Image (cartoon, rainbow, N blue to C red; front, top):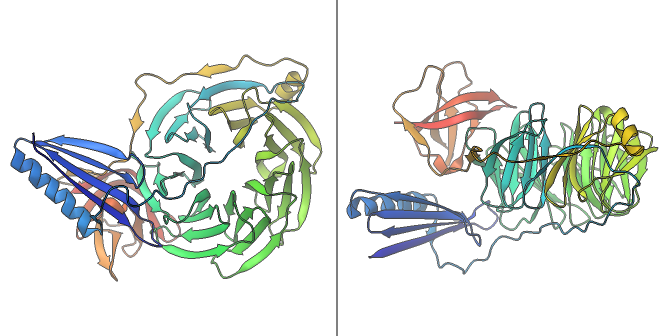
Length: 475
């Protein structure tokens, strides 16, 4: 059987692209493989009635990619983008009692990404798996992304997963889509998004800011490397690294303050008026957002991997390298220390008297952090933790390179259109009742000049629109 393969790459210096696209035609079968250079990528296969139709379909796919800037290349000549996976060690806890764990879900790989929303929990691991669960531990859905999940961040009710392939996926729609691409020379450590503005902290101590149209805005280089913390509000971006925390004005116009911390920053959290930095010198430090002054120190017994707060900073929680979790009063008084019962907490979040943690063994753990439950745990009485299992028929969603086509917009559908503006392909709303000059945050890989699409819902966010629900092409 004859076989023809075309291999293309898009790898731009200083740009967000570092991808390959491979098309293989074998008789009537067309196989497409795509993804990050240096990784295995994803594969799709289609069968056509005749060999000629298969070749024509392959030619169309290749032509589309060439028009987008892809070029023929030799596989293996370019190396994969730099990826640093956090190396952590976890020792047994020295706490005398174990935390009151209500349930535990094992994701199957080390996990750093966590977000706890009002209606569900999200956890992402280094295999690229993202699961959503109810607060009772019921597994609701699974997303399979092309590469390991660095972190999960929320921006209002949008959920984004930052991956090792340099892509940030929007998980808020029916199917995940690539919302941002990060330059291949940026070794991503952590991300934050606010009102569509992406903030990227990297291995070299750099901070890169990208807008909702996936376009570079500004960057800074802080004094220290290994920046595991980035948090943003309406006033500033707070960048934590080996030499402390540096605050930059939100528009990139300059540095607002810098505060050295006791040890290198390994994790960061924020409240309305303060930022919290967990460090490798066994402390969490609270700094005022106004000028970076030290407000309080929370002393742990070993390296701090993660931290979080109850609303307003009423309680401060920390997870250390010895599989323990701590709770402090706002002034720094240690209230309790308990063993996690399953590794060190790499990320954590508090909601409604429950503390959710992802641990070094890849588990999402829900701890009853109420005063009564903790008091009982300290006296040796804890509930039997429930091990949560995934259902065999669990819905699984993967990023799609194509969209379903429709011939008309449903009554509730909103029509958007791709238009050329100053050499760039933008998306604007055509339907009545929306601001036609605003851009729509929209997957770049499906944009075509003049093409129209139907979306289920648009929400305004700081001068642009974001998509919720399914995207269909209108033909």
